[in-house]
Structures are given as C-alpha cells and as structure tokens.
Amino acid sequence: NAGVMQNPRHLVRRRGQEARLRCSPMKGHSHVYWYRQLPEEGLKFMVYLQKENIIDESGMPKERFSAEFPKEGPSILRIQQVVRGDSAAYFCASSPTGWGNTEAFFGQGTRLTVV
Amino acid sequence: TQLLEQSPQFLSIQEGENLTVYCNSSSVFSSLQWYRQEPGEGPVLLVTVVTGGEVKKLKRLTFQFGDARKDSSLHITAAQPGDTGLYLCAGPSGSARQLTFGSGTQLTVLP
Image 1 (spheres, rainbow over the protein chains, first blue to last red):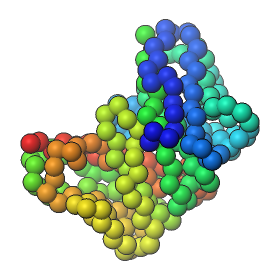
Image 2 (cartoon, rainbow over the protein chains, first blue to last red; image 1 turned 45 degrees about the vertical axis):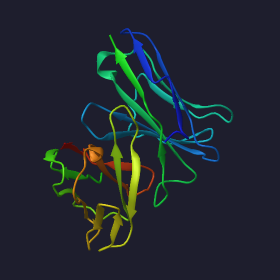
Image 3 (cartoon, chains in turn orange, red; image 1 turned 45 degrees about the horizontal axis):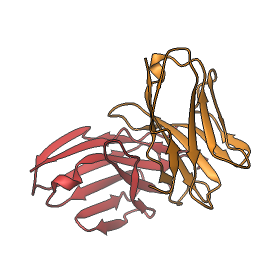
C-alpha cells in the first residue's frame, strides 16, 4: 500500500557492513511491524513496535538486529555486520491499533542483498 | 505458536478454470485474513473473516471460514491472468501481538 513508505527499495551491502531499513507508517498509525520474507515463502514476524516502545521482539535474532520507532521520524530496522543469510525482503506494516480484526497496511518492502 | 499451513504450495492453471486454495491450522483463530502479493510488492489485504462458517465474496473470489475457526478456503471462479500472485492467509496469534502468516500458495494463471 502506497501509504506505508519503505526505503530504500533495494539495498546491497558487503558482508560485515551495516544495513539500515526505514519505514514511515501511514498517517495516524502508531503500530509498526517488521517482517522478513525469503523467496517463495510466507512472511516471518520479527518485531512489533509502538511509538518509542518495543512491544514484541520475539521474532528478531538476538544478535546483530535491532529496531526502533522514535517519537519523531520513521521506524528503523538495523542489521549490523550483515551476512549472506540476511539477504531477504523486509516488509513493514502499520495499523492504527494492534492486530486482532484491524487491517494492517504493508509497504513495498526493502530487498536486501548481501554480497 | 499457532501455525498456518497452506495448500497447494504451487498452482498453475489455464485462464477460465476454477480453483480452491486452503489454509489449515490445529489452532483456533479469532479471525483470518487473506492477502495477495505480487512480485516486488508488499501483501495487500483481500478480506478478513471473523465468524465461524462465514462466507465472503469479492467479485470472483469466495472466502470461507471454517465452522471451528481453524481453517479457511479461497475459491476463484474463472481465473484470469491478473489473479496471478502469492496468496497468503494470516491470523493473529493468541496474544494478538503478532500476525502469523502461512507459507502461501503461488498461483499462476496462464492465458
């Protein structure tokens, strides 16, 4: 959905570099979710954030990965010291409230390639 | 962890044919959503089903939620090439803090 903006759309990093993925939710949405998708697979939950708070990070690797959603500005997913296995499409979704019956809107994703 | 299994994983059919894809779980879901994802894009919500036994229609697409709210199906009538895409079902986890996705059905409709 064009309302959720992710950038960059494509990101190439060498092994060991840092990757920073940005997500601007739809206006009025304070809930942000990050998902990872490997080719021809479904989406795997990584982390759920509200403004300035991490609500659920149970799907995020404990090392090298971090996420934030500051009071001002976009949500950031940061991957330090990237490895080839980090290559995937990373999607952000936003909603006005938590999941349940609420519709969430996805961005177009950032495709990370680690060379 | 509530898991969603989708079948078939891949489906290739001719334009004009009908098809059904399935989403099954051993767990009860308060609701299920169906998304379609096209190459290079994010998933787009098609429908949310909430009540056991519910049937929703969206043009040539018919969605059904099982009576026990453990499974759902998507039926497409007279498929068209524009229906090509990855169809994903998803449901909120017990805590509703996550949306759990199935692995998807990759549909290809040949002209």
